[in-house]
Length: 55
Image (cartoon, helix red, strand yellow):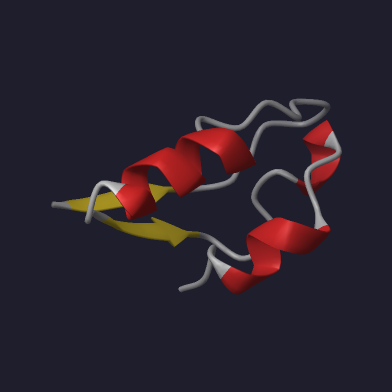
């Protein structure tokens, strides 16, 4: 399955639909996860996601 997540575009909105743990679980189950560049940064998610999250 292909799963996609985009970053929030509203002002002062920093939530994101997937966390790094969610992404790892989906990928380990054999799914493909696509994240918009920059999604999760406002929520403090950086680093490890950069290798998994990309469009």
